[in-house]
Length: 320
Ligand code: UDP
Image 1 (cartoon, rainbow, N blue to C red):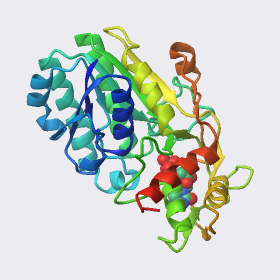
Image 2 (image 1 turned 180 degrees about the horizontal axis):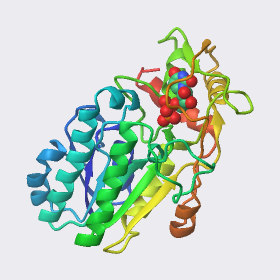
Image 3 (image 1 turned 120 degrees about the vertical axis):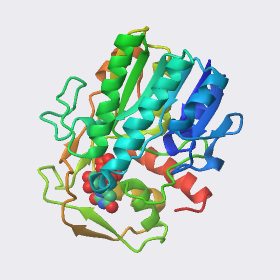
Image 4 (image 1 turned 30 degrees about the vertical axis):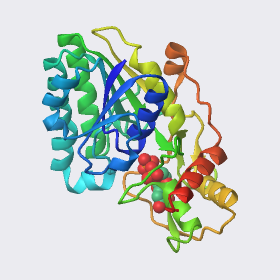
């Protein structure tokens, strides 16, 4: 298939681009490099540096059969203090992309949504029909785009899938997390193990969980890539599907730190700090729907393996 990957110079977009190329697809990456890296775009993909707002001429020229849309601002803390950036880039940018698709008669899209659309859950594992009550602007903007996709499916026969990611981690095709502002647990712990940071803070150990630290559902980026390839052809015109993507198994912050110590063989000094605002005690996905509908199963559910892959790639890049 001829596909356009918006945000293909970022962590997840670049790994999915590599998987698409491996699957024989023809890929054009569109990315404004606001947070991505040109050298992360896999060889074999065409690269166009442009924003979502500038995407119309690119789509008109490429005439893709499908779009995979990863391009977004994704820092929860920043979204609380600079909400206009999130409404403009995530919602305004997505609207521009959908309009560019409509003009180019491309009506198939896979969108990177998020567990943050659910907010504080009433039940875990979280199914897709759980209430959506985002607790931050980032989650609210992603939820708005999900609603946009439902409208475009209904009104304009788009075939759309929203994949709601839980905690994406690990590395594949030599590509891993490379954020300028790193806020995520696993890369931070790996930087401490490598001696690039002195220590790290565990945000709270008084949660109602077995060891008192927060529980999250870490999914290997390769498993996420598999899901995108399956989702690409799944919906019929007029359909907008929503799928959660996680391992279905939660690991605590303490378990992650222990796994980093085990994999790297280095000490990871930690301090225990206050809870981080807006952090629910447990976020674990029910991925039953995508398993049942598309036959997806995580091939790398083991935490040690996820941490090992992230460590190897970060070390090869001399970043951890
Ligand atoms: N966390 C932590 N210390 C850090 C970074 C994260 O204790 O330096 C915790 C955070 O409170 C959460 C979990 O690790 O419970 C995962 O956080 P991350 O930011 O990686 O992902 P999120 O779940 O917020 O999307």
